[in-house]
Image (cartoon, rainbow, N blue to C red):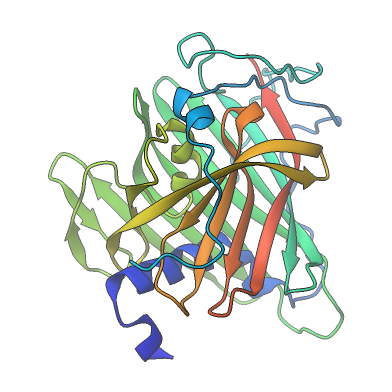
Length: 312
């Protein structure tokens, strides 16, 4: 097993998909009911408007069928009413339509090649005065038989600047019936140093992201060419991954059909990798994430079920 992840790129790729879907590690536990967002929101369709980058229409190339070798609880303020209006699909520039400041995304989580639904994942993003907080939390409804309950909360926080998200720290809390395990990575942009959760220190590269913020930073990146680099940290190291720009597709979701851009981690053959789909009509927000094994079988994935936007 160790021989299969003996390079930095493989280790970081493994850690990213494991962390992004770390919820899968608890999918075999008993029924867990996590605290809901403090604002009890009625079902609605978010008023998030379509932003189209010019490269998205011009680079509508198909994705490749085979791998490419290279290898705690955030809340919406009670004073922020939610827009209960029909989704508007329209062309707009980033200047005309700023990135939403308060978002709640709910995903259905699935496991295995038969895509069995095992739970829900909640993301909450709040941006205020140039700073952001992004939190991911998991609810599971699982088969009878497991003996220890736990849940996991991941938090990314930092600055939101002209070019997007700049993390200051990334924290993971693993809650069990007996203890809470906490891991934290700190981004020191002044001294260009990354302080990892395992105690190591690494040089901090420009545009570095953590394992949660990168999903949303993708909305801030112009898609030119066939791939682009993105430095992503885990609790052990920082590695620059190459992200393949795939085709524009139509994705079936519990919200209906959504027009998406398909991205994929470039990887060596017979290694685990991830794919992510961004919604062109929902400000390039992540609406699907999939982890794939060495023989191109789905390990687990989550798919968007609800998007809500808060407005002050």
